[in-house]
Length: 408
Image (cartoon, rainbow, N blue to C red; front, side, top):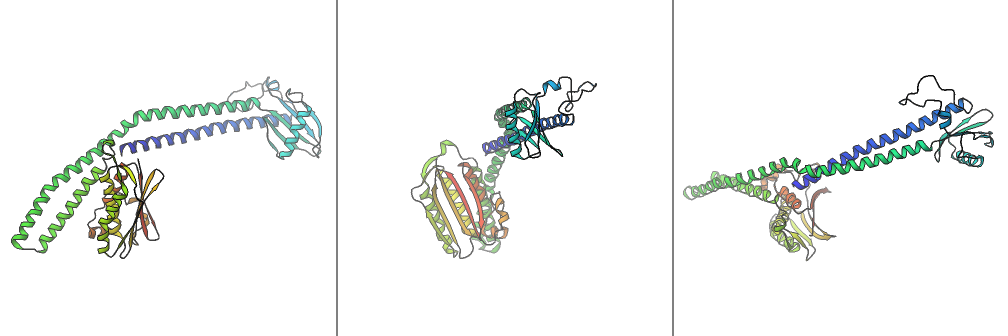
C-alpha cells in the first residue's frame, strides 16, 4: 500500500512538473517566434513606406528592451529585396542591392512560391514576405530572417535541455525524499492496523464471556427472545472482529517468503462448491466457467478468501431466482476472475464506493444478511497485495466484479 502511494505521489508530482514546464516552454518559444514575426513585419512595413530604404535613425539612443528600432547599422545588418509585379503577377523590376544571397533567378523562384501560396504575408524558407497591392502594380518585400529563426531554434533547444534536466533532477530528488514524505502515512497506517488488531483481540474475551453467560442463562431459565437477541448480537460482533482482523492481515500481504505456486482453478472450484448449496437453498443458481489447470504465484489462503468474499457478496445480493456466474480464465500473463449477479436495486453511482470500508450500498439488506461492508475492502486489499486490479461494473441490471492477477 505504501509503495503504491509512493509511486502515485512520484507520478503525480512528475506529471505536474512536466505539464508546468511544457506550458512554460511553449509560452516562451511561441512568444519568441511571434516577436520575431512582429519585428520582421515592422521592418518590411518601414521599407515599403520609404521606397525600399530605411528612414534616418532618430536622435534618441536606441533601447534594447524596445521593439524594432532603427540605428546607423540597420541598413547594413538587414538583408532584403523588393520585387515589383504587374497586376498579372509578371516581374517588372527586382531590387537586390541589399541582399547577396539572392540573384534575379532565385528571386523569381521565390516570387513564384509566394504567388502559389496566395497569402498576403508569410514565410518561404527563412524569408519573411509581405505582398502590397496597388492600383497599377503589386509590391513584394522579402526580408531575410535566417539569424532570427536560428536564434529561435537555439532557444527551443535550450528550452528542451532545461526541461530534461529539470525533470531528471526533480525525479532523482523525489526518489530520495518520497520515502520521507510517505513515512508519516506509513506510521499512521501501521498504528491503525495495530489498533484494529489489538482492539479486536481485546473484544474477543468479553464477547466470549457474554456468550458463555448467555448459554448458562439459557440452560437455567430456558430459551427466550432476550437471550436469543443477545446471542445474535454477540455472533454479529464476533463476525465483525474476524473481518477486521482479516482486513488487517490482507493489507500486510505481498512478502516474497509467503508466496508459492498453487492451482487457482482448483481453489475456484472449491469455493464455488461451498456456495452452491447455499445459493440453491435461497432459490438462486451458481454457474461456473473455470479454465482448468491455471496456476499462479501468491498466497493461496488469501486468494481463497478473495473468492469467498466475491461469491458470498454475489449470493447475498443476487436477486431472487437469479444466477451467480463465476468465470476464471487466462489472459496473457494474467488471470481474469469475474463474478457477476443480477441486482436490480443497485445504484450505478455507488460503484466507486463499494470497496470503501464499512460502506453498504443497501444498509437494510446488509443488516438482514449480517454484513458490515468490510468484505469488498478485504477483496481489494488481497488484490492490491498481489499487485492486481479489481473493478466493479453495472450494466443492464447486473453487477460484475472483475479481478486481474499476475500469474507470477
